[in-house]
Amino acid sequence: MNSFRISSIPILLGFILVLCFVNSSAPANTVEKLPTVLIATLIRNKEHTLPYFLTYLQNLSYPKDRIALWFRSDHNEDNSIEVVEIWLKKFKDQYHNVDFTFEKTPKNHHNESSPTDWPVARFNHLIALKEEALRKGKEIWADYLFLLDADALLTHPETLTHLVSLHLPIVAPMLMSGGLYSNFWCGMTSDYYYQRTDEYKDIYNSEKIGHFPVPMVHTAVLIDLNYQPTDLLTFDRSNLIAKQTSNLLNPTCRLYNGPLDDIIIFASSANCSGVPMFVSNEKAFGYILEPLDSNEAISRDRMQLLNMKTTIIVDHPVGDVLVDDIFKSYIHFPEKHKLTLDHIYMINLERRPERKFRMDNLFRELGLDVEHFPAVDGKKLDINIIKDMGIELFEGYEDPYHHRQMTMGEIGCFLSHYRIWEKMIANNQKEVLIIEDDIRFESYFTDRAVSILEQARNTGEFDLIYFGRKRLKDEIEPEVEKTENLVHVGYSYWTLGYVLTLSGAKKLIASEPLKKLIPVDEYLPVMFNRHPNDTWSSGFSPRNLKAYSAAPLIMFPTHYTGETGYISDTEDSEVTTQKLLNDVKDAQYKSDRETNFAEETKNILEAELQQITNEFGSTLSKHDAAEL
Image (cartoon, rainbow, N blue to C red; front, side, top):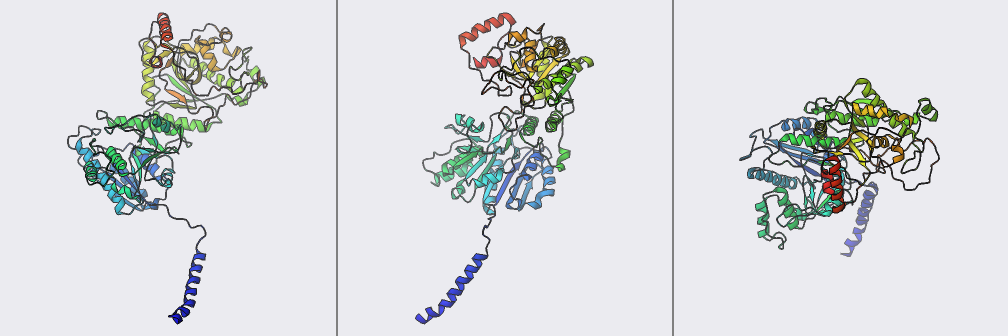
């Protein structure tokens, strides 16, 4: 035995040397491959969203060779299958594996009244497919299963990479919609339905940032299949009950007696299996369409998609919606129109081509026929040029917040609007929409704008309608009689979007504002006689502009003071007199967000209501009634 041990020493030493050699030859920073992900998507009547869904899916930065695709499509009344096939023909070879199965008939489920109806047969079919996706992920030894709906647009390329990096059992990227709807719940009632909580708003509005435990996620859900308790997950009600009665799940979790609903059953199985669910709002991941009611048509989904696309154009640096060229034949834009107006002007500085690009893309999506109007650039003005143009500043004017005289940018802004007013008169244009190049349109903008214009015309003569503004005073704005969406406007800032009539343009020109210049968003309230500064108001007469405002507003700024991407060409420009009249700290900006006024007491409001009723013969607006 001893002789064997001695003779083995050289062999052992040689083996150790070989190991050392092998280890020393390995790279110092070995990079492991990312986990494998199976993306499962169910597709039905999504021809309108698929070009964008698939483009953004392809745009994800996660390595394609670590992704397997599992698509199922059936009961379609459109070209959904054809769209997917076109995309797969171009890109399928980039992915580790593609499994696409579809059925072209039948068109409807048993007892289904419309494509948006959800009879029992449809729920059972959907649940069976999601159960199949769960089994598929386990069969191919995928590390993660990503359940992704075909109407969720993951606009952030790092979405999947970020979710995987969190190493959570179940996590969803928070998706935005046109309202407060999203793909997570923060509360669930005892009968398994949605419960609104304060935390939901905090997360949705990004008042707090991170990833948070929640009782429900859906639409875009990443499941870690290596986390053993996820083996107990199910979308099937009978499976859930069977697991509960077999004591496979938490015994304190009551026997499921909730609805036949895939996402509620899944959430209940996760909660009873001890599998925590999270939602992450750490990035702007993307967008989601709100579900349709059974009495709504697919056309409503297309309108929601339009709203989503206009939001993406404004929110994302590229200033457009990404869509692959292979889908050109499936993308349709509205015919050009002018909202029943004579003309639409968009003011844009020539040195801001990125704004023009973004706005042109918005006009394309909305079908707006808009003339680009070159703005007067304040950077090209100076005191001598202003004098040569015959412009005189209002004596004693100072900015109410900064206590300075007008900036060259403000003068350029006024001249831009003024020249459009002149052009309106020269061309005899009866009604015109004037917009600036840093706006976002409210959802369903076209329909709302046309409705507001019809309401205004029914009132008789008007001069101006704000589509977007910043309300400044805590004052009641009475509703315009016999209208639903118009109020008599109070003191307001911003000229980002307003309708002006020919009579209104003539009134604005007739007061010769270039002889006593103040900023244009101060001048307009002076002219409809709601400006609080009597000294400025006294310089102009008559002050009889008949002005309304949309309520609620249908245009807003793209950015506010301090936000990433905020630029002001009026405030951040040379002052006509460089020295400030007063040293002001923490001054407000015109581009700050709208003021949230305190609620008025009932007695005061009722007294003012009576006074306004006597003056205008009208009732309070819905907005003011809500404040009461």
